[in-house]
Length: 488
Image (tube, rainbow, N blue to C red):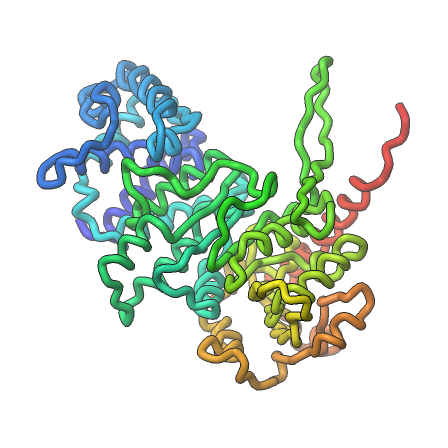
């Protein structure tokens, strides 16, 4: 069976399950459990003969030998038992549940996976299949999965600008399904790169480190990495199921590539004795943070700085409010400009994220040793937002839309850049002299305000209106959340 036929087969079965109310997310989870067990089974056979540490009562053979309700009952036992195992096994099956209620359809899924030799498939085939399903899941607005899905073409461009080198560590404190890791992996294994044995081993086992607080998303990430030949079946996962912001990082990294959650407030739900739920703002008391704030985005920015080695480099997707917010935001920006070399800002267009109303940017900065000097000499800003119109369906962002920025960034020597209509340089003294040290800088004229004869297509215009309204609504929610509550 060729690649496209296999992908179509797996997707078509998902459509069948959707008729029973099983969404892409639930389907992906079940596929992850069963694929992992089938791969483990294949690795336990000749010529590999590996000890996969899966108890015999829970292995693939035990599932394949049953059908109907006995299969469903056994599957539930397998999920529970494997969730208690250590290492990668326990991480994949942590709090695993069966979401396929029809035993006949579960049996069909087992048969479909059993029919293929998955190890025999090329890594690209397995990876593309799984990445395709993750993309479908992100597009499924009901699942809410799009919130952690960064456009892959944007990841490619960010990685090409940073150009990570072999033998160096890469981290993402909110890694979702592992998009940045795979973007970096593709860069490190591109056709014109030859890795020696030591570098290959480092890439597989010691390069990628992440955090993902949502257990279901973390398991998708681990499986995504595993299908791309990162990590081992019987190894320890390098993606922690923990809140990265809780404490100082135990390890420093060479690169951080990240798109932290867009939600502005950190909070946790508290249930009272009467069963009433309340959400309390969560403030992280970190000695290494410049400012204490409940703004999650500002906390992630401070945390990312703390993750970097003194030679470390970062490329981070950040929403607009991080660029202009006063109070803690201003103080954090001034410290960032002072202690790191904040050299490039890419203003992203609207309409490229599954989360609506998002206005975001990519901030590129390098860590520097603490020597008492101001590290930012100036910042280059590329405006890819003004007079640019994209939608997820009819006019999606493509890699070629980012090519001019990558060329302007000049990864080979970013100290030799040229200004253009969309690319301008702003000196440090001018940045800090701005009100609140705001980095929300734009200079291009918005043509749509004057040129009523050449408006964008109706669907693009409608989406932009929705994005603006969503952004305004999100701002109002933040204001409302910050207001003191009236006494009952």
